[in-house]
Image 1 (tube, rainbow, N blue to C red):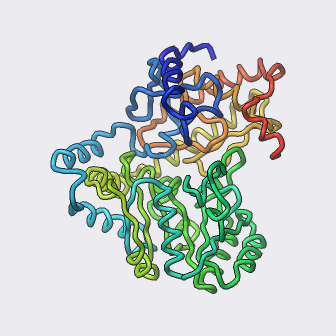
Image 2: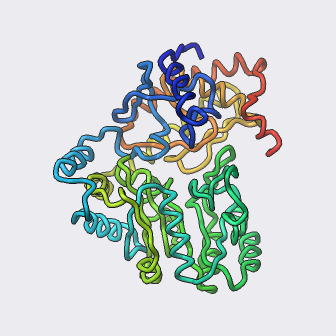
Length: 424
């Protein structure tokens, strides 16, 4: 709250002149506290530095891509080695086959893999494959769930026309009756059901998937011939070394992956069962950079670390340490802090805080203490974090709760989040 952010402010002024809105997409800080930096200089391990030189323990992990630490030497060495040999070529290298083999071996429902660049690429391909396989049009997805930024699924309606959103039905996540109703409405035209691995919508409490809901989605698809798609772009490899729904014993026909599968290097994937192989081979999807070899080299090294290290067990233990410590400190300070979602992908929200004024104050106080948390989006753990990092974050939280306790009565509305008041 007291930092000048002088270079950051200069860059924002320059960006306003040449970038629409000054910044766009999920990494824009328009809906964050005013003191949050927009521009960063570097990342190393579990930390990032903004352009004004401030260092933060980063619980956003670049919104998910950082799994083994920023600038991980093993992953980046594999990337650089391949970069010296060739990256964007007239055709793919053998690494594409090796990456497909590695992902198919890792994910129990998968018999094949296709690669692209972003999560939106992967989810859009999944929808296309499902429609090609079934020769039907209708997709069911949960209200509020995020599946990318293409016209068919973007959360913002500007520039989107009615036909972009045609043939879509919505249900409430974890509501079996709502899902059954949507399936009945789709009738014989149901192409697929999209499912997030858990409810990770912004601004609201997260929720694990209800087993009855997941089984019902599988049963509907089996009964109708539709395909079940689990969108693991955000959660993949942070909940399991397999598809996230493998934890509850429900296997999809298609799954989408991205963010951390190459520890931040640009690659995403669509995985599928043999059932959908013919349809996947029939569609036309491509991109000039989808076949780049260097990200695949990084991906192979990332997947080796997934297989051969205890990263998942370690980040889970760290997540539990943070959750327990925050609960203790919040209670001591007199605050009801709701911590929801998997411990490796936490979300913090305060009771009686409809426009997040408490959350904004707490998050800014954490930022002042060198810890980057998010007031309304789920966060992420990476394997570069240590117990000492978590303990430092808990010390920062104790101070931040103290700031909030002193200032809570005088906090004004967060005008930029006024729209939330009507949603609660």
